[in-house]
Length: 192
Image (cartoon, rainbow, N blue to C red; front, side, top):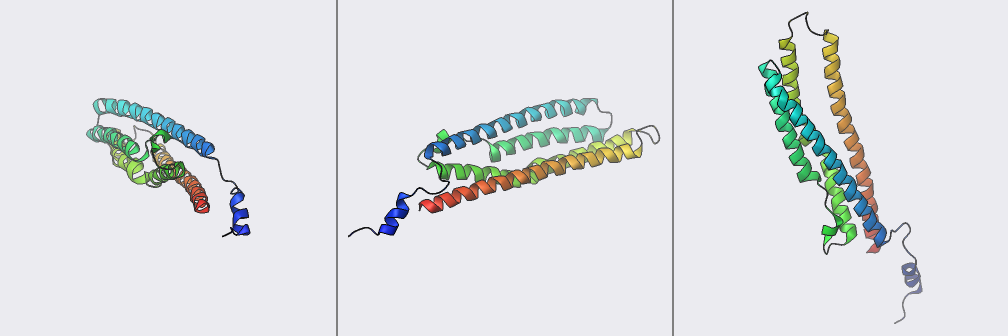
């Protein structure tokens, strides 16, 4: 039986924009290094927060400030653990027998899901501690002796802005990863 000429011709043409296996491995290695670097920076920031707020537990005057600072320390450990659990870098060398496209897709999905859910495991745990510290700050400063009320509101607005910014940037990152997942899905679909 002779092969269908149209089918034979289509199979002889490489898929448009298909990357070679070496290119995909290079991309997977670059992605691994990027995630690893991000996590090292995050862990260093966690260490800084633990040291700073651990000190505040002993130096701030009001009990709510102390409790809030301790809460921040525990929230930092929780966020670091969640980052490790949800978003640790997995080397492409650990792919084993899994095809590199499938491995890369799984890593992209894992990172996307971590970014999408960042509010629940990275932002929310800090809010009670920060609120306690703000309330404690208001109780420590006698009326009229502290900073003007607009400074306190500006501090609160800045904190909210930072959290919203963190959430928003991570959602942008999740969308970018989703586009890369869709590209891999299209390539894997073309190969089958």
